[in-house]
Structures are given as structure tokens and as C-alpha cells.
Length: 287
Image (tube, rainbow, N blue to C red; front, top):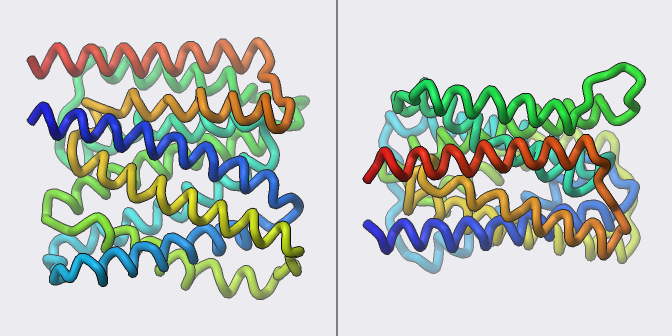
């Protein structure tokens, strides 16, 4: 059990690094429609997941009752990706990252309804305070030009959090991680590709390279985070997902010269503090 926990932590930190790297490549791709970026991100993930399934030579078995969480994980994952990409293109990388990293809190809420895992008053309080921290980053005023993309970024965190709850539900039925990724990526391509074709923007060689690297980074991140939540429950390891904020802040500063304002930093501190509180609270309850 301890080994599975440690593996979950390692996989989650690896995923945080690759998702932060994905955001860098999204930004470097420049003025390309969000849906077009999402298609390239999922094409690479689809190919890598397909190769992984073929090489594993394992029989794919999806129980009838597992299809609902697999489909919901795909739909909510699509919402999470589009909203996250939209925010990355319009906000500081660290702001977009922390709003997306509200997902573990929404995963806790989702676990109540999806996994029937009850959470306590302290856990509920932590989710509420973390949401307030998110408002420091969103800065909900009509005079704030970044309010809309920040709100979209927060919506992406909601989608991702609920998607991970359904991911864990699918895991309880024995559905393999690579299949979940393959189904998610394939479904995304079916939905996004017609929209991309209608609004297609020709890519330069440089933009194509950035989007391919974005897709590769996302695929590695997706495999790692899927492995993480298969090895351990979100409530035990989700705090380590916040290492993405460190990676994103560093990449944003050294590559783009981005520096978050004081209000955003206050929001980061509140959200990370609540994540730490939930981590130690859950750890003490389980011992």
C-alpha cells in the first residue's frame, strides 16, 4: 500500500511537469484557434494511447456499467481542455495553472456524488476557502479585462475535477488507463475536428512543431496522471498536483517574463494552503 502511494506521488509530480510544459508550447504556438490546438493535443495522445494498448497485448474489457463513467470522463475532459487552453492563451501561465488546479477540490465534491465517498465539514470548508482563493485570481469585476478568460479557466478546473472523479470510478470497474485515454482522445477528435475544419487557420512550420510538442507533453502528462489516480485516491495525493504551479511560474518568468500581481499571489497562497490542509487532514484520518 505504501509503495502504491509513493508511486502515485511520483506519477503526479511527473504529470505536473509535463502539463506545465504543455502550456508553454500552447503559448509559443501563437495565434491559433483554441479548438485547433485541442485537436493537435489529442491527436498525439490518441496515437500514443493506441500504441500503448497494442504493445500491452492486453484484452480490452469494459463492463457495461463502466461505460457511463468512461463517457462522462471524456465529455468533462473536453470541457476542461478547451477552457484550460483558452485561459492559457489569455492569462499568465501561473494564473491559468492555479485555476486549472482547482480541479482536486472539485474532485472531492465530485467524489461525494460519483464515488459515494462522503467528505467531512473540514473538507467542505477547505473547498469553500479554496474557491475564495480562486476568486482572488479571477478578480470578478466588470472593469477587469481578464475576468472572462479567468472565469473560463475556473470552469476548466471544474470540468477536470469531475472528470478525474469519473476516471477513478472507471478504475474501480477495472477499465485500463490507456483505454480511457484512447477513448477520451478519440471522442475529442470526433467532436473537435469538424469545428476546426470550419475555422481552420493554416500553420507555419514553427507553429506545427509547437503543437506537436504540446500534444506529446499532454500525452505524457495524461499517462502520468492516469497512473497516479489509479495507484492512490485523489484525497491522498492530490496536493502534489500543485507542483505544476511552481513549474508554470518558473516557465512563465524565464520564458515569457511573466510576473503575477499581489492579488493573484494571495490567491495562490490560499489555494495551496487549503490543499496542504486537506492533505494532512486526510492523512491523519487514514492513520
